[in-house]
Length: 142
Image (cartoon, rainbow, N blue to C red):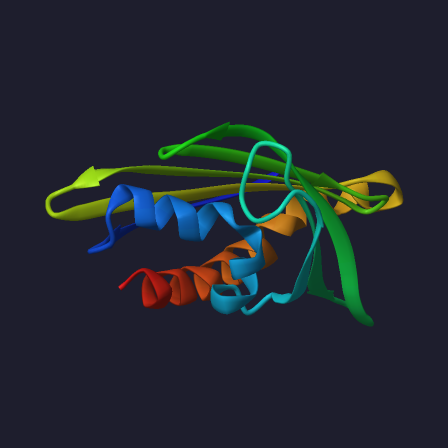
């Protein structure tokens, strides 16, 4: 399993930052690895929400259905996706920081099935993907 973790200071309030981050349709605005997001359950962010997130992959795009596992407004969100090739677990936590907030995004990615022997190599690629997403996250939270 590969892990990526980034914390970003933002002038946005905890409530505003959580509202933005918890609505996964916004992933495509800051993560260059995300091609598109379609909400399949719920209306915006919420405990019953799920989203089909199409991520860049070899040969085009791979769809991951993210389901909301934990939704504790305004400070904690846990979403999980699984398909035949990948399992992704993403946690977003937001706490007050000065006049704004500190947004922490943690992601775990695991290759499934016939790809699982490649898990030890996944971290090398996942760090680069995460670093590009962190740049976008800093931009949208500024």
